[in-house]
Image 1: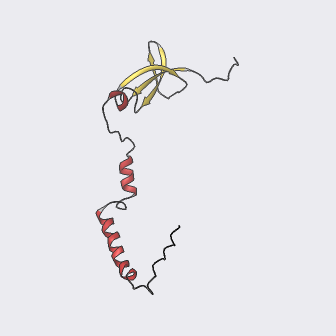
Image 2: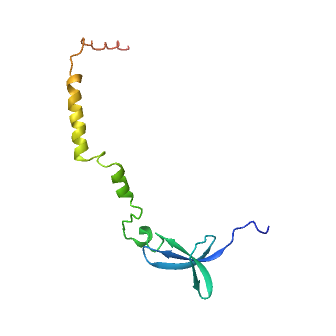
Image 3: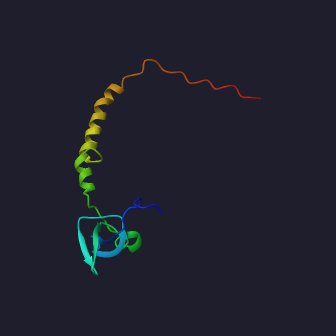
Length: 119
């Protein structure tokens, strides 16, 4: 095996912030926070979701919106999609355009002639 081509493998402690649980493992990840466990320095890696808090493993449905994605979307598209005010504005615009579209046609169009039946 070649020397100095593999990443360093460190002891870490993963901390699930949503469930408050921790588990010790080894990883190539590092962090700025170090904690001694049984006399050994472990890097602390914080997780939002792990197997102790994920709905697939726990069987509990839990709403997690840590990044504020819903609020960000509502702020970005404030009133553009699905609000009563925007729907009323769209209906008013359609009603204003309706008289122009209701102008009579220039000439009636003849019905298409059916093709002769095959024998």
